[in-house]
Length: 108
Image (cartoon, rainbow, N blue to C red; front, side, top):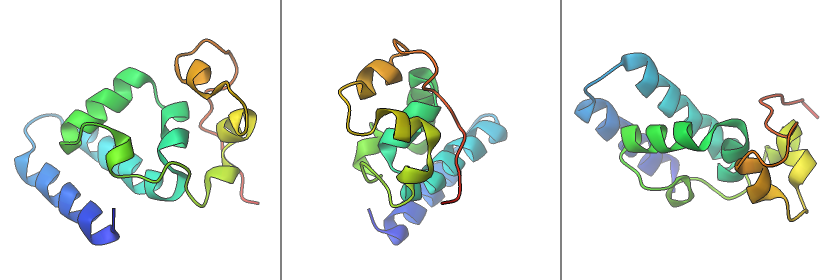
């Protein structure tokens, strides 16, 4: 999705929103940060329930519809570095591997 399409999606979500504003703000934040990190990193730092809630608030079915799979800054994510190139991504997303889910990132 282009930046213009992303901001159109955000504008529609804001216009249609009825609920707790802090939840909408968090969903928009995930979308904006996800543009640079990708949906795989977002899946590693948020629980599946949180992802579902945020997608619903934004009016999308899946993050894959709007975010790149792996963004240009994914390499900075501790969680991504632990699973990149392995078969463990979905196990980590489901919480079957401990110690992976991390929001920590490093500038490198």
